[in-house]
Length: 62
Image 1: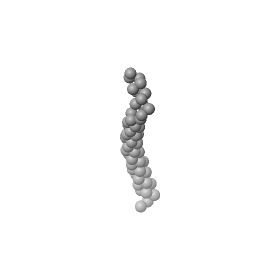
Image 2: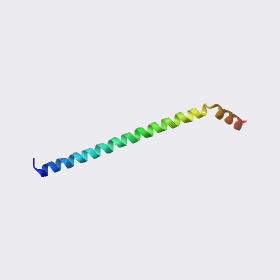
Image 3: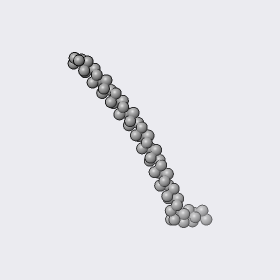
Image 4: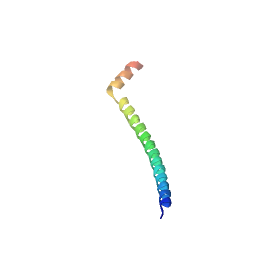
């Protein structure tokens, strides 16, 4: 294998690596958003079950 062929293969390998990292990052960002949304929903549900929140909401509604 001469130097030109090795350089071409290295370039292809670099491109595949960069594309793989971009695809992996895209999936990781989607999973992070899904996790963040789930955490936010759980936090909101916890606030609705908080005794102080219920007392405040009752006092506003009456």
